[in-house]
Length: 80
Image 1 (spheres, rainbow, N blue to C red):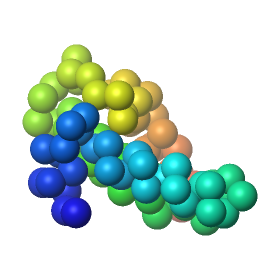
Image 2 (image 1 turned 180 degrees about the vertical axis):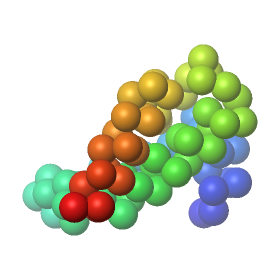
Image 3 (image 1 turned 90 degrees about the horizontal axis):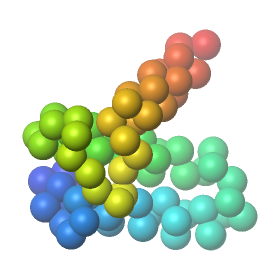
């Protein structure tokens, strides 16, 4: 699915959250092997908050402030 479809799923971004769980289970819960899927979830969640505002909620996404912190941390890790 694409971003538009994942944003429209019930709950929003749920397919991306499930993909992470599947990946972690298949890879012995090694988060590094699933980082591309975590990035995809963060992309979806960021789009969700941009569309609905920071006070919106979905079970698949961390709160907006935590999401932005995690995205910043991931960006800093890549910059090293």
